[in-house]
Image (cartoon, rainbow, N blue to C red; front, side, top):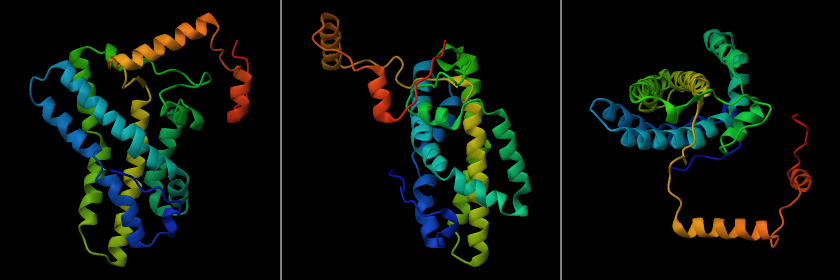
Amino acid sequence: MKLNKGKLPLKDMTYKQFREWLLPLVEHTLFVCRERILELLTIDTDRDTLTEAFREFFEAYYYDVAFELDRYEKCLLSVLDSCDTYVSLKHRVVTVESKRKASPMGREVRRMGSYLPSDPVPRIKISALSNDVFREFLHTLAKSEFFAAHGRVIKLLSVGWTDTEDRHLREAVYEFFVCHLELEQFLEDYAYDPDERLEIRPEVAEELEQSITEHESGEIKGRPLQEVAKEFGVPLKCTH
């Protein structure tokens, strides 16, 4: 499901605009993936099936839903800071921020499947977990408060608009956002590559092999790192 890529601050959205932004998030296939994991955990499912279910969940959350929520992080945090009503939520945000290991840029880079040299690499490799520990990990993930908060948002979306319901819906979304921060914090300690163990198509493998051969023979020369860094505006620094 395609997410809304608008730039209008959430606090300035009308109730209708707010719903239009919110619906693709809460109706995302992520929540179907979560139900699939819960279903598989109730039976004696093999590791490969669980791994595939987690891969679908991870990609839906990390590369789509979480990415969209992160785009509005500054706006949502400013709303929480602007009102004493959200003291509890603000305390939870402070707790997350105190535990975060990755920098803001590092979190963006991780969404592209890499890590900044200045950020610590997650210490737990999901693919190395035993079957029992992997199942326990999935159970913890699927039972996250993030999904309970999602259920509350869905329930409020089914109610017709009034000033009171508008306020309640927005408050539920703020909690949903904080639960997202907590879920992402939970995942930060885990190293996971969704492309690991996936087979490369023969034609792609052939192209890669040809490129390597041409590069090693001198037919193709790589671009200097300084040139690439300058193009993307990334400052280079020595890490040794």
